[in-house]
Image: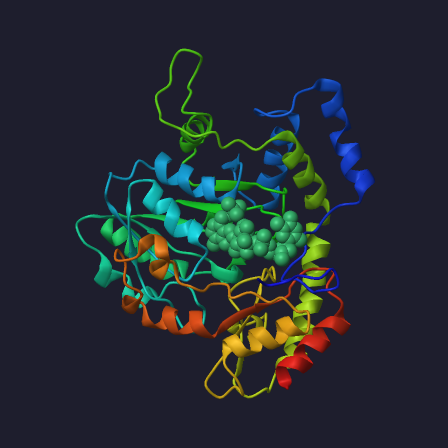
Length: 377
Ligand code: T4K
């Protein structure tokens, strides 16, 4: 049992508006008694997010996971068809494919960006492949140029798991506009949160109606129910939190940037400590903007101890880092005997070496310095 004390520094801490700002936002819900099912707050948030994420097509969802399941259903991929994806992610990515009756086919990751290795995608394509579902892990954006070239050559759909990539631009294009669709998570632990929540952005505007219907039990109208759908709507309280948090998200990202700067200063030059290359490349030459969603660190063989040992040492000092993402999704119990993590050796190696350090807007720089000192030894 990993005991957590109130003075511990946890891996993240939710961004929240002032209490009064939120209560003011939800006041009209008390007057209207309209709490969910596409109310004013959800409609308002949808419009605001379309502007913020620079997309014409966006639907809100109850969480990021259901966003994945909804878009996989809405795209009507053939039952049992294969979806090329990566195992170095949160289980949600893989579970969504399986739960939609599709087959994940695991591609290895690029050791520098931790995103899908585009040179290994084509060898995995068969006549059963219907889509590619890459992950912008930690907010590191996948090589979309290469992915879209492969997808159009083979007639495949591209769905990005952009759960970590809120507000990021890639070569000047908002991530919400990459691929056929992208999903975002607005979970409490994310750069931008609606307590629980998510969104789907997509290219084809006709998907809007389909997603709306599937999201609401598959109901078209009171007498016509063309789809087997879940209940995946965002409620009004979540939307109200989203409206408040959106007012502050830019300054929260800026504060996260300062935390990252302090980490880079404190950890650079320590033997065996590899920082996220997307952070250490100069922003001018980097192909993407940054939202500082996570602070991953890789401990190589040159480091003075193993990843698990430094994880324990940090924990003994009240610093609760996380092994995001270990184990790989192709080696978890639920898929025992079904998938083989040996087919993705780079992802397997990285999953055994990675730690994400505490990362949130209000993390004190003095705490970052203390964390770096412990790691330096
Ligand atoms: N795709 C990807 C690539 C994802 O990473 C995720 C979710 C999804 C899809 C699915 O999106 P959602 O359906 O979740 O919207 C967390 C989150 O639950 C999950 O959203 C996230 N990825 C995953 C990477 O991490 P846990 O189990 O590690 O979180 P937990 O509860 O241990 O919280 C971590 C720390 O955050 C706590 O120690 C303190 C802080 N915290 C937590 C909560 C719940 C807060 O400050 N406030 C809170 O309310 O899964």
